[in-house]
Image 1 (cartoon, one colour):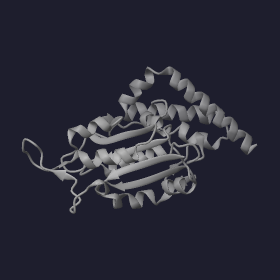
Image 2 (cartoon, one colour):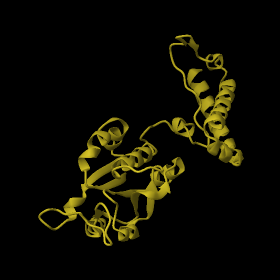
Image 3 (cartoon, one colour):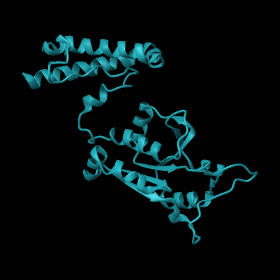
Image 4 (tube, one colour):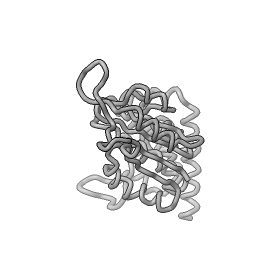
Amino acid sequence: MMQIDVLTLFPEMFNGVLGESILKRAQEKKLVRIKVRDLRDWTHDKRRTVDDKPFGGGPGMVIKPEPIFEACDGLRKKKTQVLLVTPQGRPWTQPLAQELARQKRLLLICGRYEGFDERVRSLADMEISIGDYVLTGGEIPAMVIIDSVVRLVPGVLGEKDSLAFESFSAHLLEYPHYTRPRRYRGMEVPEVLLSGDHDKIMQWRRQQARQRTMERRRDLWEKYLTAPAADEHNARQTKRSARRNAKIKG
């Protein structure tokens, strides 16, 4: 079972996200345990003070090092990966989510106000940013990280094929999906998807994924062009999926 601990000043923010849908089921199935911790529990004054004015002056308040260090002393176990959620961190990507999904213990530290005392960075195994913009705190980015990691934990989704072909696999965006009705408001499902020919469907999906990536994400398209091995892997996965589907329908 994966253990995820979160250090935050606003633990109630996580209730809705962690208590619904896939994240809720993953916890109920005991595939992951998520504990949200109030950073103020590691303070020692009556006001439960976690911040102070910055040395050298300037606007805002800075989160003090003591409660974070003491919290990590108590929560950090063997093989725990400590993640500092900060705009200055490593960009969050699907490969990074896959990397962390293989870990047994994660500890996410959410910032607030003007940020952390710089000495807090010495605790982190990795600093992570979900994008080049600033939010009011690290709680929403932490939810993004948890959601994208937990869904990759074996057994959470239960469908390996859906993970193999979703966006950013092999540097490609995902191909289009259709369901009933066949015609809707003048828009029709492509005939190839109704043909029953799994080879043609596979080829159409790969072509659509390439075209969509080339048109919408030139940065990914350039990576795709320089990673032929990844494309071959994607093709093999698609063929295996098509064969399984054919057996099921046959």
